[in-house]
Amino acid sequence: MGVDDKIGNAAQKLAGKGKEAAGKASGDENLKAEGRSDQAAADVKQAGEKVKDAFKNASKD
Image 1 (tube, rainbow, N blue to C red):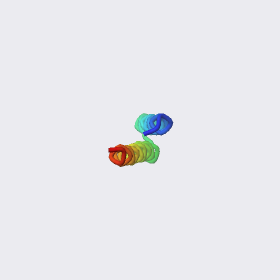
Image 2 (image 1 turned 90 degrees about the horizontal axis):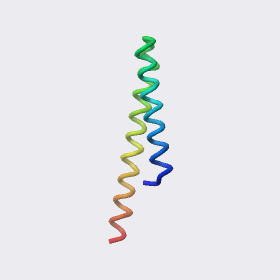
Image 3 (image 1 turned 135 degrees about the horizontal axis):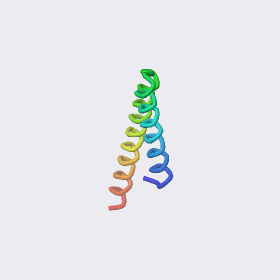
């Protein structure tokens, strides 16, 4: 996984956590759900990058 991808995924996850927290604090269920969705999307991207890395490393052997 490239450093840029790691940073982007971490930033998206952090932003999602912020949205979720803001939604909880304000009682805004839509914002809270959007934050959870952003976090899940970042997790999926990170998992995809790990799979690509695994295939890349396997092809080197």
